[in-house]
Image (cartoon, rainbow over the protein chains, first blue to last red):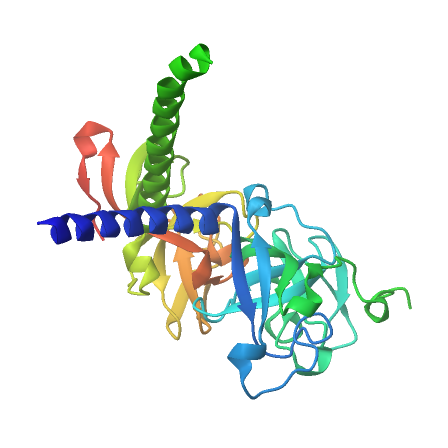
Length: 172
Length: 165
């Protein structure tokens, strides 16, 4: 009878911890591992394809920004892919609603529609981003990456600025 | 010392109550996010399925999560134009379907246009095509914007029951 009691206690604790953990990761803060080299200088600098799960960076993602969907230029965000809702991408916002960006298909500039944003990877050579999928609705954004917490030697806050070589769009 | 000894059970009791309350809130959040949640809808876009003045409906999130939505389902979608707003529309086409729609129903009832819904998107439209801002204006919406599927109406009482598909 003692063991039965013990099992029920343990399972109760597990369920409670699960509930609380899930709530915290949904509403406040969660940890996401970043794979692939699309954000290469910022995450996964050496960008190796082997042993991905061990070398992948872990980042802290905060969800407070989802309460009013206010983002600023240069924020690194996690969002669902518009083409496949099961995939999540990590990219940097490079333009907000009302901004103009140069279209990849022509020489035109396109205006970002209301409620959308333009996301690009830091490593423009190998990144599936708004240049191929177009503006992303803000509603698909699931959180904002704030800190790198793994690997230990690169623990620290993420800088929110846009890399210098990306600025100056439309000034020409 | 004596006072601390007296306070101690009270503090313990208060702590216990707080923990129970916190657990309750967590459970509420999980139910609301993953199982089902009540929503108030108003506006003219879903007439006659839903009234103008505000219905309380129950939306479930399980079908959406497993990707089992089908044509004809009434869904809650966060608006692509304003992520703070949630709209209620009906799915008229899934990915790969060909959808034909009236471009401007109030003036011209013959001018149709047809589009193929791209991968990972759905075509949503209000039941009241004359007063609805939907995929005819902003195009197909990504599946990830769908929150839940409406399956039951709670209020008003005479309309209680499941919604027709």
